[in-house]
Length: 82
Image (tube, rainbow, N blue to C red; front, side, top):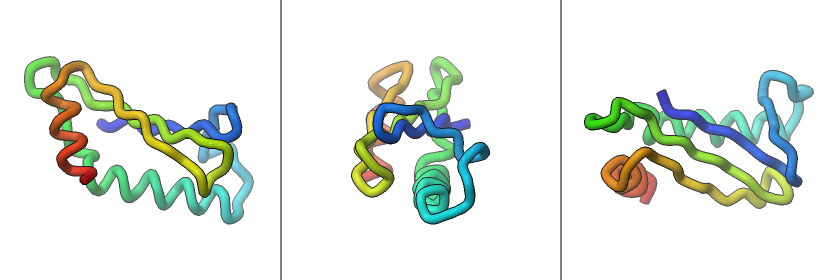
């Protein structure tokens, strides 16, 4: 299963602990969209799922860092995201 995490303004964000509102809604939509696009990717050689870290100064200025066990899983991940 894909591991998606968020860091906003230098702090890890847990969607389950956030107060309801626009920032939580935005991050939830990002998580759902990423899960829909690449949630099924798993490395067939190592049986590991990739990790995506979304980080930035605010919820509207996020960049993604893609992490995986090998080049093949990262290539699969990047191919589906582009």
